[in-house]
Amino acid sequence: MKFKLFQALLFVCLLGGSSASLLARGFSGNCSGTYLMAEAGGATSLWTFEADGTFFATSSLQGILRFSDQQGSWEKDGNNGLKGAVLALVFNDDGSLLNVSRVDVSLHTVGSGCDNIAGSLEVREFTGSEDPLDPSTDTGEPIATDTVTGRRVKPRG
Image (cartoon, rainbow, N blue to C red; front, side):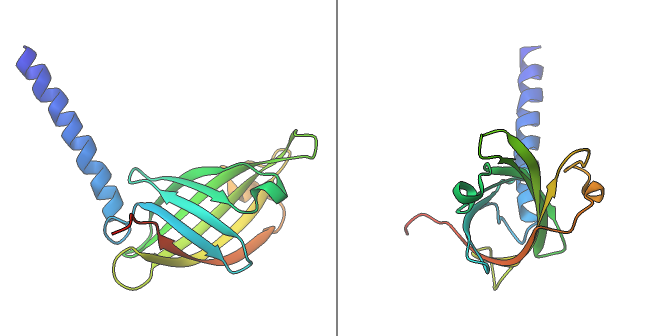
């Protein structure tokens, strides 16, 4: 009985490990990792794409525009691309919640491998009854659009 339980646990661990690798390969090889991003409008940010589809971002504009780190997800889009979305909490001067903003991104690899990426982003704000998980509920125009380029963060070699 103990051996069968051990086999089942081992199978689950191996299956979980291999599914993460398959997801990561969807973006032109194993492109999961952290990228130093440059927005054409001047902002700098760090974007992290986890192999399980989780997407994290931190922007140089956060302090100025009073918004949180961003969290969301990404998925494969074609052979060498991805599409993703992150949400940010935006605050009033008094620290109360102003709105939830959504950043949708479309990226592709540049050159061979995963060291360089490029693409675009679109930012929308959701207020009142608008739902950031259902972009069609946003009644306004995007508050920003921009192009981006990124370089993968790697250990000194």
